[in-house]
Image (cartoon, rainbow, N blue to C red):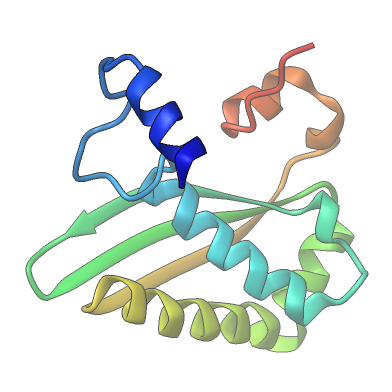
Length: 138
C-alpha cells in the first residue's frame, strides 16, 4: 500500500493516448478479424494456421444489424480449397461460429459475408504484410 501511494504521488499527469471511453487499443476490424481467424484455426487444426489471415473489407452498421464483409487470405489454391471445404461446408462452419460470437460481442444481429482469396506468398512479402495491417517493421 505504501509503494502504491509513493508511485501515485510521483507520477506526472499526461495526455491520454487513447480515447477515454476506449476499452482497448485495437480497432473493431482487428477484433472481428481475429475472431474469424480463431474460428478457422480451431476447425482447420494444424493444417494452415500461420498462413491464414483475415481482412475486413467493409462493415455496414445499422441500429439492428451489422453486416461484415471479410476475406480469408491463404497462400495457394490448395489451401483455399481446404478452407472452403466440400461444397463450402468448412467456410460455412467458420462463418456460423464467428457470427454467433460476434452477435454476443456486439449485442445485435450480424450478417457475416466470408469469401476466400489465394494471395501467393503473402507471408513472405513485406508490402502485403503491411497492407494487411500486420505492422511489420524490419
